[in-house]
Length: 453
Ligand code: GLN
Image (cartoon, rainbow, N blue to C red; front, side, top):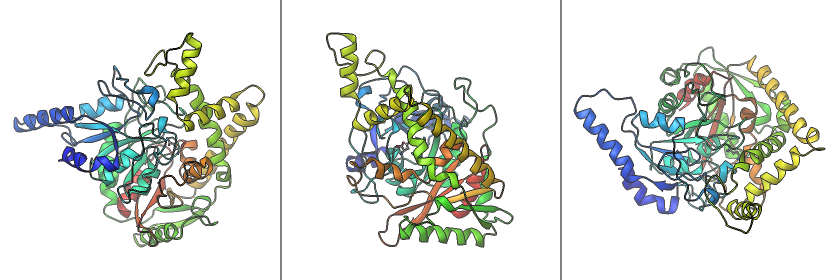
């Protein structure tokens, strides 16, 4: 049924870069046969899934949305890909994304944009626009995303789906093509909080192949979602972050209205709402756009025409590398490589990279102080509903401003969720509600999210 749905709607939506109908059906048939034979199966066996093209998949093309990896077929599986296969989930295909996960609209994909199923003239968010659009268009019941500065939560917000960025280290990144290694985290995407929790448990857990992987059990997120569904939040303290709530203006009216309504509902369920302030968040976006390009410029050095993918043959190896990178990378990737190399260069390192790392520490301290006063923090996920395709593509700063509310969590390594919060009355488009919890407390997101759903 999902393959039929993909065939019917994915032309205009373009959520998928590659569809593996044969592989998905083969897994599904094997699950059916085992079920008929009475074999005990994992909980999500037979539930189809779409995987963001940032994860390597053995035998299936993997591009990370870049032309530089066109035609590359990985010889191995990412740990998360392997866990999905072990869970017996049919892999429908690879979902579209901004090139190397740089962007907030999926317009920076080297293979053409994904469109928002709510309005095909609008962006589905980014970088994981394909994973979110596939859910919103009912092409897949579950997908996987990656979140470096909001790429799971912001697409979830603008497509009325659920997306979770787990605690840094909670999900193995072995086999995930790195953007900024100190910020990247893989996470589950679904249409309901419980669905997302079920996938979180499949993905999570220690992995010796990833040196940053936490050596602790997966948080009990499914139990937390079931508990939340009882809608009793007596004794729970929820903090509204002043700097992320649009209190100082700049947020769309309907976004603020839906946010206030969600707060009222939380109060009705017994939660206490307090206001907290995180003054250093004013500088979080600026710090992120120094740290991310710095790490990305280093991570992307490996795309050199020798090891993977595309190769534009010239008279010397140096010219070959230059020509391959010039042709293979898109404008946004080049912009960030240049920014990152500059920020890391001798003479500027302390002024830019060093200052950004100090801001990062201040952001972490602000979170610590805020969580000393409450169990979770909340805000709208994005300042506006989805904008029109083409509207911000030539204005990188306007594009970056989308991430104002999602970026602090990545700088601190804490978990965050976005879930649907109705539509804005003025345009009928989705609004997202963001929940943030202290590191390792991912389960709190699911409890509050399921209560609100
Ligand atoms: N939109 C942000 C950026 O462009 C976030 C990207 C991400 O989370 N992968 O960097």
